[in-house]
Amino acid sequence: MRKQLFHYSQLNSYQFVTFRTQASIDDFLIRMKDSPLDESQKQLAMDKYIDTSNKGRLLNNEVIKLVIDYCKSLEPKFYSLICLSVMPNHLHILFEQKQNMSTIMQQLKGGLSFKINQHLKLKGNLWERNYFDKAIRNEKHLQVTYNYIKNNASKAKLTDADQRFYSIYE
Image (tube, rainbow, N blue to C red; front, side):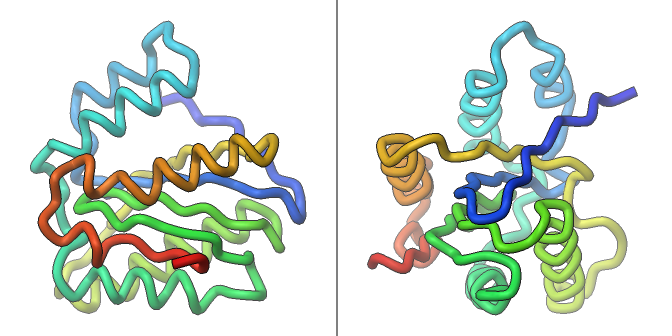
């Protein structure tokens, strides 16, 4: 049985969220969830691994723009989007919450799943059931998180890194 993560939800708080394609999850990631590391350390280790994994790499080419456009379309009803990075098999997004977190994630993952499956002519579950979220504590934490998202595709040495990042600031 897989553990469910506790999800923090507070209106007008800033949230950093990561979710992955279901096909990208393998034994390493499942074992990592049960490791003794704290949640931040686990997340960094999983992100580093998944950045180089070839599993579940569906978010490429025209799908990148589709993801960015859809995420922007949920404003302002669900959140105020700060930035996002579309990695080949996962998504990092930073926003100010305007609805309950479960409502946001249902719209985000459900809508993206429908659009991406339709575009790629796929069926079934696109995303891993769970997601990682971290409430932003202060301005410094916001800046560190923003820079992490901004530089994620470049650090992974993706040739299309400039297309994978969206920000209201750039």
